[in-house]
Image (tube, rainbow, N blue to C red; front, side):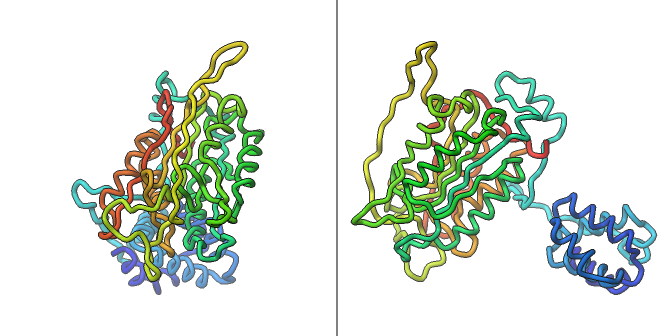
Length: 388
């Protein structure tokens, strides 16, 4: 393992490495997204001497495991072949191949190649994405964790928020965040979002809502059986449609909702227990679905009331969705993994299909959950083009 290789040469590395080489290695690892800005600054600013900087760097990378350690060894060979040989790092540890037919998931975003970017931008079957629109991307992220009824507290929701915000920002989206909203405030926040100045130039938007839920509702933080606090999911489509938000006409609108849609499990099982690490976003209530129209009249022309949407809901109708209190919901975990690994070459519809596929082998043998794509009205393929 590469981390053990670094441990073996730690003392000689600290003794022989130069301060200039430390800075070069930090730049390389930052570019690889194996270290972040705070970590690189910490190595240089929290240590006064060259030896302390070297110890901090090699220990920080070792703790990140084999992948990060292997990359540091590769950069060391490229930057200073002499030191590389002196340390006895004569061969780079080979990466462990993924089992056949099993996808290896990335923790960091794989970027689109220039050739793919240029090819897809020419296609009439692909939604338009430009340099200007990439810089104008914006997303709405609503996370309800703390409820008036403390028993409804969604432990692990903070991890979902962290993971989703990190993913959206890495894809180039400005993230407008709100926490712990009532249904009325969710409606107000969504309407305010439709007036965001970036919507005119953006190529797309994400709207991500994470809370408790029912079949056609997301629950506000004041919800109780006696006094429901319910935000209709249908309002998302109404507010982002052409009548209320003409700036988003003919642009992809990606909706992700992490919330239960009922009280039943996806198989024969008990959906929750007091001591389980896996919990659900169900409050054991259901309401019938609403129906809606599909076109709107216009004095000058006719436009579709609901077009260019694609939604991923965390479970099928009337069933619960699960999250781990330490890692967050399975849906958001899988979205991050799939988007990091595949968004450089897959369109949004295919990305959602791969997320759904992840649930075919659920980590808890006693539980089942299957997300569902809903109200998909995309007329073209939409690529995120990470890194451009």
